[in-house]
Length: 96
Image (cartoon, helix red, strand yellow):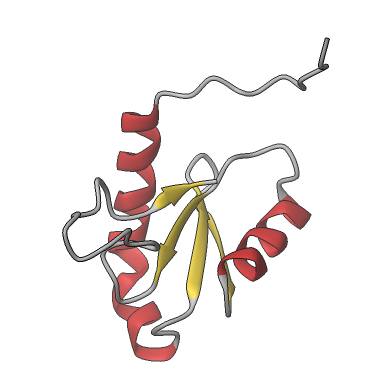
């Protein structure tokens, strides 16, 4: 049997909405100075962390909040990852 660590249960709709609200508040300043970088948002605290790539942002976030889940956005884009031009993103970021 594989031992799987506890995975926190979250309401992804509420989590995403909180993170998107935070992003809306900081979007203007981030797009001026940090376009094309990534931001990891911790919705409960409102803290956010910048990185040149996805793992850079999440690594910084994990330093302060090691047990949290983050909402990841590529600054200036609607989604972090697009599967192809035929598919539209489900939301404006990813939960990591």
